[in-house]
Amino acid sequence: MPLPADYHMHTPLCRHAKGEPTEYAARAIKAGVPEIGFSDHSPMREDDFDEWRMRASELTEYAGKVEQARLDHPDLPIRFGLEVDFLPGQEPWIREMADLHDWDYFIGSVHYVGDWVIDNPTTLNRWRDRDTIEVWSAYFKNLTDAAATGLFQIIGHADLPKKFGFVPDEDCTPLYRNFLTACADTETCVELNTAGLRKECTEIYPHPNILKLARQLGVQITFGSDAHAPHEVGADLDQAVTLARECDYETCCRFEKRQKSVIAI
Ligand SMILES: [Zn+2]
Ligand SMILES: [Zn+2]
Image (tube, rainbow, N blue to C red; front, side):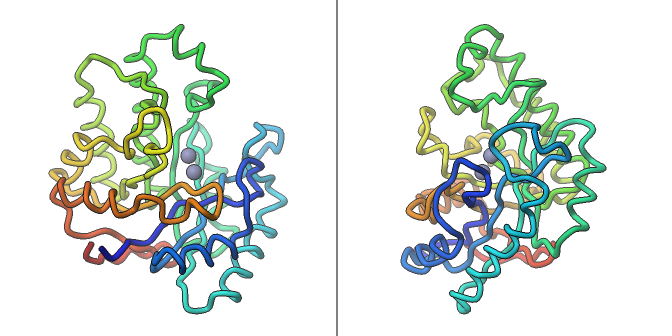
């Protein structure tokens, strides 16, 4: 099966990934991934915001590392992006970052509900203390707001709250519909992210129910491994393509300088 572009990978600048971009690129070529894109965790305006992202002053170094990967692997299309955390009120900062470099795309991701990083395994107690549906509702509210800004070309790992297996019994279709309607209105893609297969939930993000609804509403897709080490580049993208096809998708999107083009999968 021809693999799609892998648009979600990190670098050591985020302080929890290993390997230089040029090593990720070499691995992509070996794994038969035809195109890659870096999307490391964006800086916040305040460098002490948390400990798992690059500093604002490191954006130039980030650009240099990606440029080095391009020089070392001239036949591999390598895109330059960011995984941008969306928190309410961050829009001006995100616009400032967008003007700083010639980005190919921004992935908008939600990791925070209030001051809580919901996918951090050291905070599992907070999941046990809260109503699961309440956390999911707050999460999808943020995600919907993120999509509605139109600041992102792609929304990352849309149902990240399932990571540790805390999934509500309630029907979440209204949450999904609000979110996906915002994606459709702003022509924002949803990412199929295979990192979930490597977590407790052992599922691709997002769930087939979300993808099927996305397809019905005309939301387009991209693919990403969320690689935090070179050996993860392209991981399980074949499974993600199979899932996309099962949900009636026949195309996915590429981005160059934030311009979208559509290709067959
Ligand atoms: Zn993420
Ligand atoms: Zn990521």
